[in-house]
Length: 173
Image 1: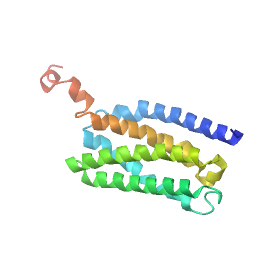
Image 2: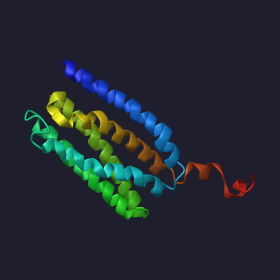
Image 3: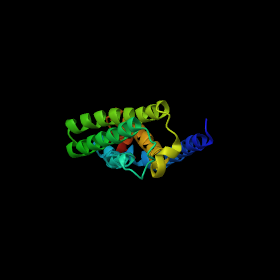
Image 4: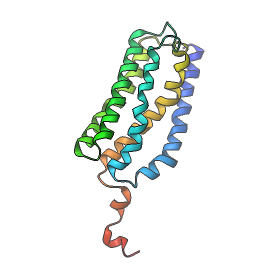
């Protein structure tokens, strides 16, 4: 494995650790107390910026040696994920909005995992990403973690505080 790839994976690992700490300390504690549709909104807004993946199609941003198949999987998958995130935002808090949030979260996570798979199987070298190097080393770990948070929110029906405390018991305190 070339040395540049080792530093690439070390960067991704550190980013996963750092974003996990941010999510555990600052994101989840606030979102877990909100109703499901309201808790999903900040995550969907964040993912609406996934259009930034189109950067891998811009000459000069990435190396001309970047495998075209990898660039297309990355760019168009991210664009579809951004559109699904925006559509879900528009439809929330309706049941249709929750359904699209499920579709977005499933597609978005599968897309990110597919990009890692495509990168590994296309012979991608970190240097071929050029200025887009920050996407997989900074942004993708955040997106992966917020997908996990999104699944947790989608799977719970009420805020955790409501589940732990019934209205009758809340009045006793």
